[in-house]
Image (cartoon, rainbow, N blue to C red):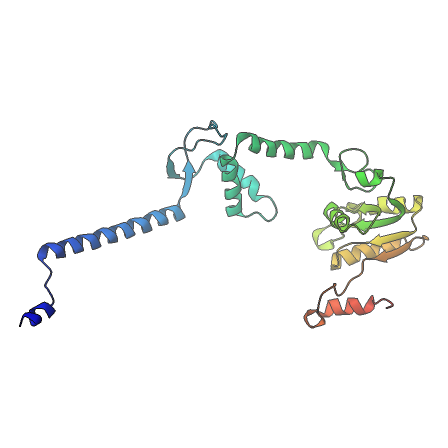
Length: 265
């Protein structure tokens, strides 16, 4: 009989039921409040109001957080960042608030670097690469092979070839490519300067390093037709299979270029 009473389930008291109920209601209220706060952050912009003077570590002091339409100066900075290529609205917002958080000297150094580039960097007189004087460092280098001339579309293409450390000749930057759909013709590029440079120089080879696109190939074909009567050998960068690739995963264009440009083994 005693064992039977020990095995019976005890009925909770009324006070315990009230405590459990109150705990559940408190937990439910906390969840609702958290969801409401998260929704508010998604539909409203959070701006920081407070002192604009730098703190001891140089960062800006940000005061209380309020929900509003934003600060005009911050919005202007976001709009300017969003104009950069590859930067969307969210990325521009992160960059803008990063500028607000960093040391004042660091933010002003970025502004000074942009101003310095716009005021001092120009195109080289001979090759149209980026330079801070009349000639770029490559054109002034006496160790360069001045019988080789590599034609590229943009200065960033020149930098890519330089990083390979396999070419020691000179360059000519076209500053674009012929694109009729974008209203870009030969007169908008430095093609005339290239023709004059080749005719007046002592180059033995002209390497066409335009991008392997329809516009790039069209630009290279146009230049080769203008220089067809010269004694300069016109070549182009090899195309096709790269080192370490597999035929199974190569597309038709890659295989066709590889077969067309095959070399003696």
